[in-house]
Image 1 (cartoon, rainbow, N blue to C red):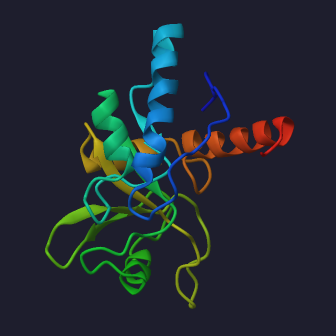
Image 2 (image 1 turned 180 degrees about the vertical axis):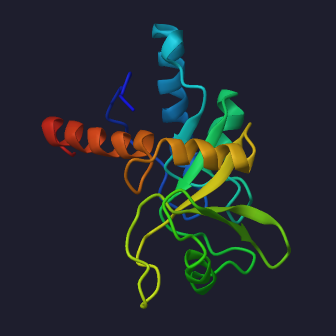
Length: 185
């Protein structure tokens, strides 16, 4: 679980944030970083990319993780910190599912009203279930491109030392530090 490569750059976002259209705003910058890594040191190109965003768990069934995976030709996994409410999936339903995951590493499928499986809720931390119900925050795993949901959940489980899997967590921590050192604007 060590960081073997990281790269940062300031980007100017020309498109406004529109819910459901994050990929159109961010994917080109991510593709540039992947291309630079491929050119600089192909041995450090990851076997899969975890994206701080959704895969098929998306109103159009094609979130940032799908976009990035298809355009890069790399396996991708969407990591959500909260649930996209599609196909009848709800906060109440997730709260019920949380009760089925008693220990870190356990997952529950997110099945919509249509019967489609949109992803999985994964418990990555311990925490007290207690009488008041589960008090942990799961991560939401959804397929982006090139992996089964089972493989995606296994990989996320393997990379989780804290609530958020290390590749996403380290990207967040290191980018915030970079911005602190280089100015946020």
